Image (cartoon, rainbow, N blue to C red):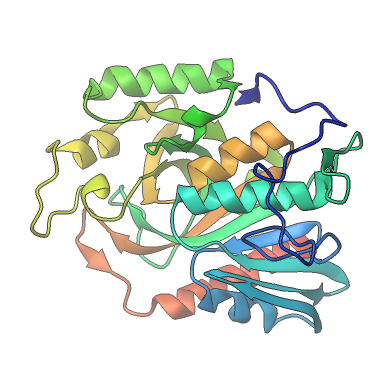
Length: 299
């Protein structure tokens, strides 16, 4: 995914468009420039932030506003931020925009900077497997994200040739229903995916706009399209398969590509949708994921 247009450096951003708190912090995250590291570990569950920061030698900043909780500290000499985004691509839209503003916008002048700073943003989440051979408690690293939400449709972008080939193959395979949002494809940072994907499952992640109906679950309300999960599971493009369902990666990858950041998602499989299995101890599996990611990124 590539940006078609970005706001020019030096353009003044009105107070209604980039909202700041009275103390100069960004509106939702309540963070100020200098309070985040160049490596940002994002999680959906606010309780997971403390699990990550318990590995830090020291914590410099603890900031909490709404569901957004941030701990910034050092691990083996590296300055790292652990940040809870909450659930959904709508929250990722907020988090990515405000993280980017913290490093690429002069908040006092309210203008984008000429010098660009790239963050490394790694999501550590949970997911449901769409393939029978992807067991619970193992890890899936997303090489691509298939956006079944609608966030990136609101940003000026174009798909790369590689993304278009996968997307067109998917649309043909599924005969995509007209009543659902048009899918899009976003790409993870290749070097990060290779580093974190070694020995783990890698492929395409489907990002849904919800947890129940949008992921084919039926409690009382009935999904509008039957058999959608079976179409996702059976999709193949060259050596790629749709491995899992989750709710954040498409916007994380799409906005990172547009704004020039390096992004990767690693998810612990807590459920296998085909086997109808759920992890017996997903907390332990998540702890192993945290240790593996920190070891591979920081060493």
